[in-house]
Image 1 (cartoon, rainbow over the protein chains, first blue to last red):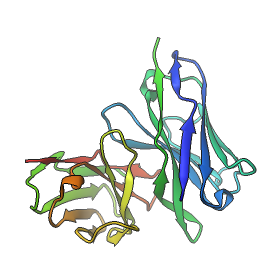
Image 2 (cartoon, chains in turn yellow, cyan; image 1 turned 90 degrees about the vertical axis):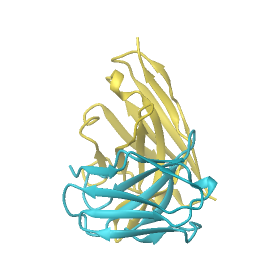
Image 3 (cartoon, rainbow over the protein chains, first blue to last red; image 1 turned 45 degrees about the vertical axis):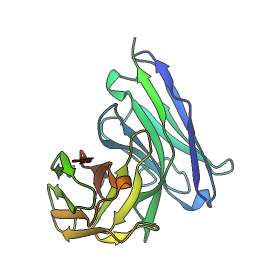
Length: 126
Length: 107
């Protein structure tokens, strides 16, 4: 059974930093692209970032939404089956539940999400 | 970015009745569309992908259709566990984008 468990959320001041982690189990982690998706309180879903199974940080291995580009960095450690999201220069509009999600890929194209964690809440406020 | 527009925002339906949800995209996504169900306090759950293929374990009362820019999710006979928020997501172009959701509530 696929399990994704996020951690690292909390209250942070505007301009501050936070690092989220997602511990994965129940599947061959290195074989799957992974993603972070967020949901502001009472709002819809917003894709944030994605990373290939190999975990390279160059373009084509990582993708970012324009709203977080240059502030957030996605990474993974396949030896530990963990996915991370380093969030810097946080803003009030980054307040959301952050979900770790596993991509389904076909012919190397990352498509949709077949497994989700329960999420971790990030609150950016002074 | 591809803009996803779902309608209606809220759908009031009696148990046992049929519900039809709509998702429109700002440009063609072929059949590259997924649907998710989210209940309060829970993570989203994958229902459909490729516009019309049910995910593992999803009951046959859920069906999806459409292509190009117009898509529908139909629940043939609503059960109590189906009252939730439903999101569409295109998987044709980056960035992957979601609709704003349709809440299916008990009438």
